[in-house]
View (cartoon, rainbow, N blue to C red):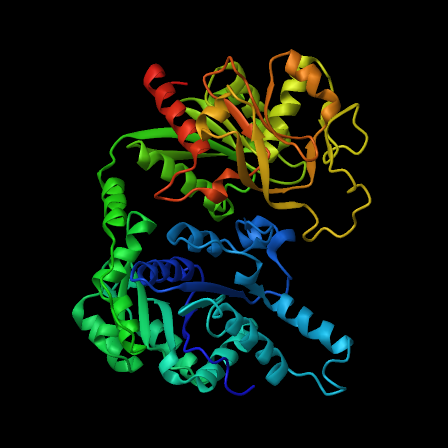
Length: 545
């Protein structure tokens, strides 16, 4: 492909070894925070090795949370970490899958752009990946590129081959390789084992990549002798062996890296200045997390509760709101199918100060979620419904207050007696499921004097959406006459965006996903209001809801 670009952009490639789910996303986001705080313009890029074009149609048990960006892209959950840790806003261009790369190459081949040549992984696929990496550097000083999967996986090989070639194209001084591995503690022998890290680095070097930095995930800090051993056998400087121990909060990770001078090490490698880094607000945040002793119990009712990554942004948004108010949110996971099966489901909600019903798809577990909604409504327990959670709040109200027996969503029943939740206009004939929902940021107009207007302190907000069904406007008047207030709308198409119960301590539900806009230093107003109401409820009941 030849020399890439003309600007002297620096590239940091983050790879993982030994096992998956070690925290490459957190490591990338933490490093991005430190470099941004030193005054550098950064950008992120996440490559996922699966063949799906995006994760939008994947089961959460397969992939975890689908993170929705402002531009309506369905992306990997690591983009959520990038946004929460830095000032950047991610988009479609920040997440590429194998499927998307191959799709673009095959599309060009079909249109004859390769002039009849044989299209191969090298150079055509690798050149396409290079182009994507180069594009991310157009408005950045430093690009942080995370390679999904684990070194040794066959799926990751084209990406690893590309980043091997990349240093030849842009110059070795402009590229740094950071490898994240596991250093397990074997209790039987009472020692940390470095062999998995050695093998992982050796596998990487077989491909032709020698890491400049090795980040070691451990239960405790790495002892100096273990650090020296890894440095010797993996051919890196001892200062480049970074300890990444388990910490109480993910927001402590940047401080751990900074203490070990990881950001300074990379800037030195790039021969860039190391201006002072301002981290006082972040240090204060971490200290607040450490000092919190009070807890507030909140139940999350879902059907993917065995994999908490399915609700990653939701968990973080609750913690952001909690730390702002000096409490730790203690999450109780409630399986909606277990609620359905229970003879006395009300006992499952005992002791909860708040109930949250999040988004989701499909009919499984729906009745259990509606039992939770009804319990919160009738027992005056603070309630927050999000996306599907709002739709179920509307269905529950229609059935049990308005008296529309059999009211439901067309998603669950194609021919319901009362379709209080129906398809978006123009989607009845939609066959392609990928990327065909109402996705991304839309304006929402809030009714003055409502609870949600008071929380946002604004008449118009902008929030991210991911859904295919809407509240059916034909039933709005009947429900409002019975007390369910429509407090927010998308005026352009007269769509219901938020509902609330004015005579309830806190009963608010939104069609949009507020969790995607919550930040540790700027908690989202909806979560602040919900957690605050839950704290008040906990005080009043002594923790017995």
